[in-house]
Structures are given as C-alpha cells and as structure tokens.
Image 1 (cartoon, rainbow, N blue to C red):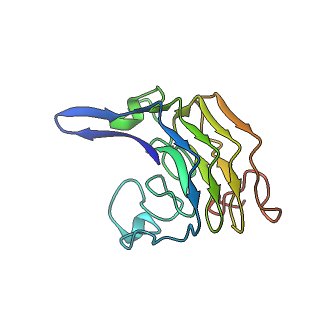
Image 2 (cartoon, rainbow, N blue to C red):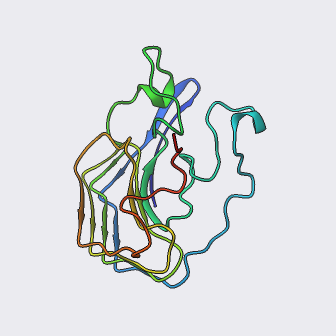
Length: 167
C-alpha cells in the first residue's frame, strides 16, 4: 500500500508523502491476512485521539492494495478545525500519481483509495470471490481518481465499504 503519513512529532511537524508508486500485474491467490491484534474498536477502549480499529485510517483490511493516508476525515477521524494541529493542518495530497493496474485478487481482497490521495488510477484490476471490490472513500477530496475497466464480484455493490456507518 501507499500510505502517506502526517504527524506531529515535537518539536516539528513531519510528512511522509508517496509519489508515483505503481502496483502492476500482481497476483494474490488468497487475500486473507491477520488484522492487527492490538486493534481497538472505540476511543473508550484506548485513550488516544484517533482510533486504530478495522476500517480505521491506519488499516487496509479487508482490501489487499491501497492508497491511503492518515487524513481520512469523517466518519473515522475528526474534521479539521480552525485550530488545526499536526496532520490536520496539511491541506495537500500525501499520495499522488498512484497507479494500480492489472492486479488480480483471486480471493478475499480488493483495492482501496482514500484519504488525501490524488491523481490515482485503478485500471484493469480483477477481484474475485471477495466481500469487497474497489472502494474510493467519499472523503477523498483531492480529486483525480480514475477507475477504468475494473472487474468486481457480482455480489458486491458498487463502491462498497463494510465499515461505513449506517444512518
């Protein structure tokens, strides 16, 4: 995955962008993998300001390939405020020009694009026998996300995310 990160390590703010990463013609036979065993499901379970849990900004499960950043925005992270701190102050794209092309996930996986990703191309990827397919987070606000000729399982709704909070 291309994981652009921003953080406030005192006394300086630091950013770790990804530019021109290519995920090309990979074959994943079995996408099942272990969730981080130290994953928490709510702030009440761990005294931190941003959750680390399945579907949160610091995880890729159940997808296999992805472009993601810590700056996801709601529903998983707080919105930027006027009194921004650290990563919430950065307004640019931490992932840019990411290409996911010709990848095949035979079982249990998919492709994910979210956060401050920009100018990403997902083309001619195939996802089979999975509960997820290709998902672009609605908070991906930097633009330029192009999805072309991707094949997803028939049982998976378009742009499906099992972690999205239902009203």
